[in-house]
Length: 314
Image 1 (cartoon, helix red, strand yellow):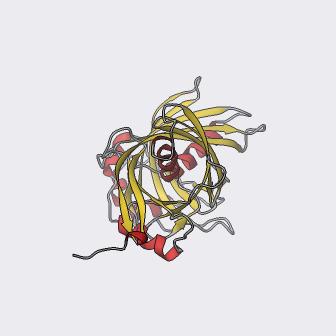
Image 2: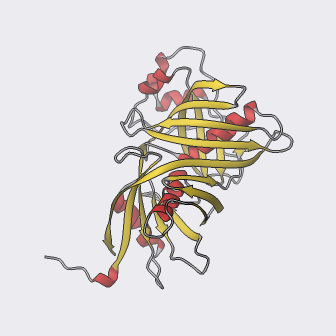
């Protein structure tokens, strides 16, 4: 038997995020950084590859300010400045896990990420986070032919939807090609394992992680300023993601800007992961600025449920 030295271990938990049901939503690992110690970026990257989730969070120890924590977010290949489901999952964990003695009360937390501060309120297993944003609709849209090259099955769809697709960043480093489909049923035609979407031209200085985000409008209440959307995120190196909070935020800001008026607030209910049987529910509220041509605030909301916990030997 191989015995690991107990001093060379860290605590971890896993959660399913954007769901209240285990084995749905998007899995997340949270690794608690050791007190008085540090994990190198190389070690964090190896741990993220070991979990093999879309993202892994590294939670820094508490400082004198108990309601403020620092997190690092890693995919299996790189560190990210921000991501949605790691944010929501970490907030729910801080509120309902061993870190909190007031899990039935609404609590306020602040997370420090590479993209900036995230202020949030958490009640039970539901978190609402005012996320960092630097919304950029890039000048050059992605040609429809590039979408077809990655998803040839869309050739059979109706001829009307061949418009170039907007390229939108929620923050520097997180960019999505927003691909609107006319019907929810068209999402089922998407396939895995195809090539990457090409012909992506970012604005100068905005080169970043980029993935296509396919969506169909389910319903819209113009008076209530509420839009329901079904989505899928499929990327050649990542595969399919069951819930993508950063992409949901990018899509919501773009749709709000297309519809918006000064100081208006739009709410979005976004379903993802249905086709892969990991149903996820993401909520986003977008408030526009005084002129209606920019974003003042983005609030990302969702739940999470604890799935497992243990120790990781490093």
